Amino acid sequence: MDRIIGTYETDGHMTEYSIIGDGTPVLVMHGGHSNCYEEFGYQHLVDHGCKLITPSRAGYGLSAAGSLDDAVCGYVRLLDHLGLDCVHLIGVSAGGTSAIKLASLFPERIKTLTLQSAVVGRWLTAEHTEYKTAQVIFRPPFEWLTWTILKVFGNASPRLSFKPMFSSLSTLSYDEAKHLIWEEDIEAIRKMNNRQRSGKGFLMDLDNSAAVTESDLKRIKCLTLIQASINDRSVSNAHAYFANLHIPSTTLKFYNTWGHLIWLGEGSTQVGDDVIAFLQAYNERGSLC
Image (cartoon, rainbow, N blue to C red; front, side):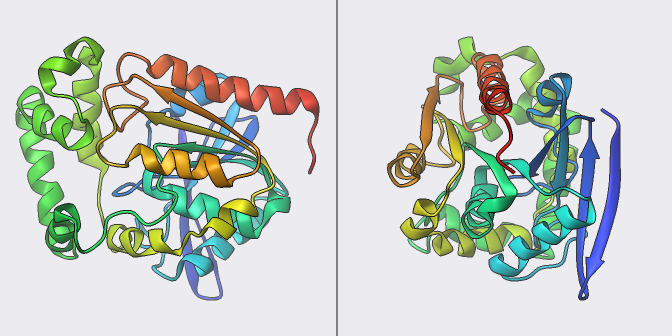
């Protein structure tokens, strides 16, 4: 995929972003440990006429760290800079928090909202082992070492390194999930580990998840598609149910993919097709912006 990388600075606040494709503008809030170089699910959208704008969220890549509200205002200024009055919005995993705040605070800028394996409220807290571990291995500067080890191990032995990564993403055992895993998923995970970094962003994501409230969800005016795997270990299905309960106009879809990364393996094609159908149905009704 051809990718244009840019930066936009206003009031001393730097936002890094990428643009892929040409057509219907879609703003993507990437997941945790990611940045504007994200790839999961992108090719299918680009192939169906979408232009994907992906800012490195606050604390990731070259984007400045800051409060969630400041970051959301920065994304709106980025849309202004790009001359985009209104966009479709996708929130992925830990990026769900940013997407929800954006759709809630600036409803006039959002055509539709799609939440994929998304965090939509309080997530990992101090009582969780995963939270305590993250505070050590994903805290700067140690996060650089964590991702370097994963990268080196993954590049040296992609198949061997896939299994421990799989276990962190799926509630299924590896044997239970074998029929859902595609051979190319192993390479996709290897490439993921080569582009991932936590920066200051991931620990901010953990704190920011508590900032999303029922009131934020209820203020969302646009049609919303919620997508999640029934086998997701990283983000509980309770988040999808919570969003479906409190966002006024939703469609909730669960998939029997092998885990959190719903763009990989058996069932992933349906995930992509459902997003395209959702966006196309909106466009056929005509823009409200």
